[in-house]
Image 1 (tube, rainbow, N blue to C red):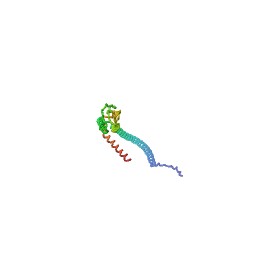
Image 2 (cartoon, rainbow, N blue to C red; image 1 turned 180 degrees about the horizontal axis):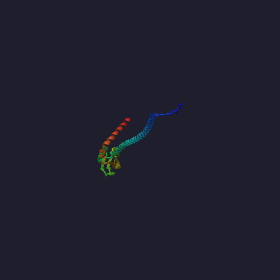
Image 3 (cartoon, rainbow, N blue to C red; image 1 turned 180 degrees about the vertical axis):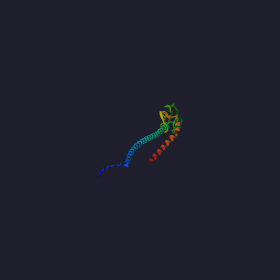
Image 4 (cartoon, helix red, strand yellow; image 1 turned 90 degrees about the horizontal axis):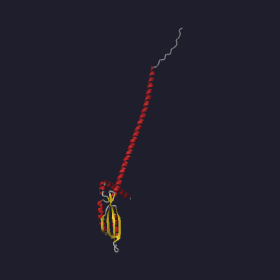
Length: 223
């Protein structure tokens, strides 16, 4: 009798499976590495964008500050020019030495206009006002009726310059006369550098005069 031997189970390992498992491991590793590279790349990109935003924000801030500074400078410059023009307008009310002499000489014509007799008309000693200005005096004695004397003084006050009657005494000519004698002193503000200043600031004066004329015209139109 023949005896049957035991069946031996032989397992044959599929090499293709082993090879595929290697690919899976490698693929997974590559995927993980790719993921980390992607994350790191995103973090780096985000960081760089953040830095750029800060730089741009800083640049915008600097630009804004620069613009504000320029605006303030322009505004300040305009204010300086405006204040300078206001100062010049005040100076225009001062007399130059030539204008003072012309003003003194014009009193004779005004006196004749109102039938006022000039007994004396002399230039007095000037008082300095600082180093640049002075008050120059005209000492006078007039003979006229009180009414005509008032007309003359009103006419003198119509000048565009700064002038004041510093002192004055009025007395009747005599007991039988209807005339009075007025003796006093006229003070006028004088600036020797006026002509040079107006020449140097001619363009500035012209600019603001045009602006004043335009504004006056606009106000006139509104009325």
